[in-house]
Amino acid sequence: MKEVEIYTDGACSGNPGPGGYGTVLKYGIYEKELYGAYDNTTNNRMELMAVIKGLESLKEPCLVTVYSDSKYVVDAITKGWVTRWRAKGWMRNSKERAKNIDLWQRLLQLAEGHQIRWVWVKGHADNEYNNRCDRLAVDAIKNCPRQPDNPL
Image (cartoon, rainbow, N blue to C red; front, top):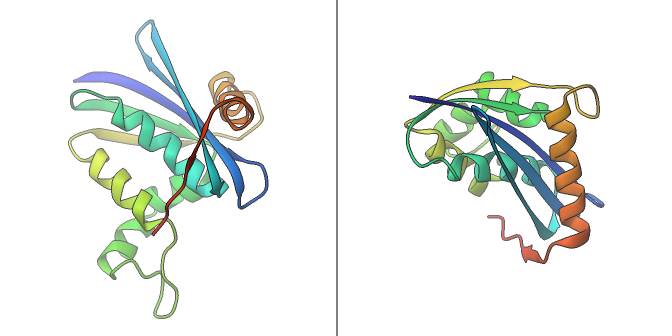
């Protein structure tokens, strides 16, 4: 299997508000940038979208390391929260529905077939690729045509 690194970040101007995602894929000496913008979204949705866009770009099963500065994304996966939410009909507890179900469903489906290691990195710190993803996400909000965000 090919080994791929996916660096991700999401940004939002207001929460909710206009948002963007930035993703950098690394495979050996090759790098690819992905970015885009959405209207009336949230930071957590953009963090998820950054991972989704990275996984969508893979053409075959890979050994993937996903780097994210989002505790929401990394903890939900590594601590099994999203698995429990799905098993309970997307409920966080007896009264509270999970958020961003549409994106979690996409992410889980895209993750199938890959072997993924999830790594949390401190945002706005020393990780060159996380900082690059942040710039891509912020620039996308300012410069890209925004798509409507249609959460469940």
